[in-house]
Amino acid sequence: MKKVITYGTFDLLHTGHINILRRAKELGDYLIVAISADEFNAIKGKKAYYSFEQRKAILEAIRYVDEVIAEETWEQKIEDVQKHDVDVFVMGDDWEGKFDFLKDYCEVVYLPRTVGISTTKIKKDLKLSENG
Image (cartoon, rainbow, N blue to C red):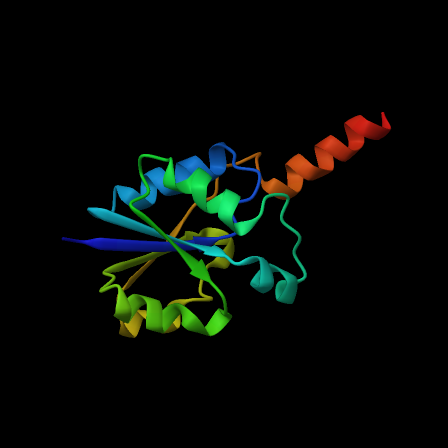
């Protein structure tokens, strides 16, 4: 079985998220999604609308996702790859080169992001519509 892993906050789920999950799943047989724990988001200075448990439940309902785990530190990726016997690590191409150190442990793939959509853009658009 070929295992794939990807990471993210996955807050305010949108078509870009679905696209990366679908394309990540196409690279293997089993997709693990590591989502940022609420405490880790705080360390990163990010505030998610949905709690970890809510985001986990949403992701578990997506047919491409086989398992959801917590991301609690930047450093855990090597351990996750080894512990879960991962063959392919996937991230959006906005992270290009940042995870090449994982090539010693698995294949690293950077997928193109979906043009015109992001959680940041959604939040900005909603804020504009509130003020407009």
